[in-house]
Length: 287
Ligand code: IPD
Image (cartoon, rainbow, N blue to C red; front, side):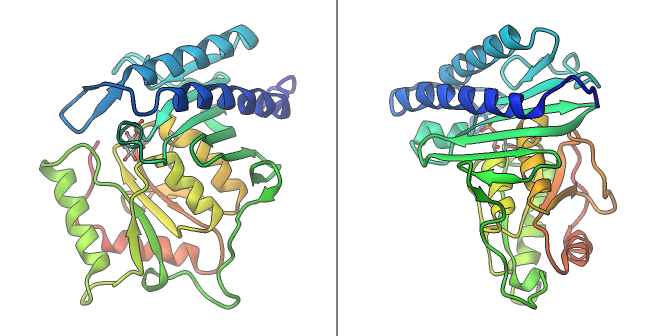
């Protein structure tokens, strides 16, 4: 790591920036129009672009030598996450929630060095949830509550049967990925399958990962999202004792832009849980 980079200063800067982004987001709630991207469930609003502009401008002003990668300025096939210090930003994660005024949208501000997430700030301005993490220094909710917030009862191993699992349907509603997801959901849910405690869809990858970091979800399985959806949450979860592995079987150390993930909380039984989850995946996700 470059010795001159002060990660605490970056965390503090991103926290202030997240608050400014939050003010902009909440000021536009209920009055935004939206456009389709890839299809009618892949949505974007003018506020996504406005928040990214705010965040990118402030990042470039304060840290002109760092790179910036954001969802709204991403150019497929051109934009690549490099080894350089890079802000990895989703201005509004949970855009569909934002459109519907469902209060689980957030700004996800990550910072990576050598493609490794080292600072994460995730702020949901509707519920005033500010998650922060710095590599090696722990992760927190609203500055003071150390993550995880919830520990499972003593002596309880994490198993599929006692798990509450975050899932998302995604924006592909046909084809192989849709088939793999829906077949796997059925196997995990069914009485003659694993009969997990339940599924939750918060509608935001960053919110799902932070819920795993908090110990409120046990895992979150996702295929199809991008580095900006996971970079900030990655540090927050790792510092809470959890980890992100591949969302297809066998990949224990995925890249942050690998697009297919399984986030798991820390604690007894977690490695076996990953193996058991992988065994339930019906086919292979391809993005
Ligand atoms: C989406 C959300 C969603 C996840 C998608 C993401 P957006 O981000 O995080 O939960 O399933 O893969 O694209 O579009 O709301 O920024």
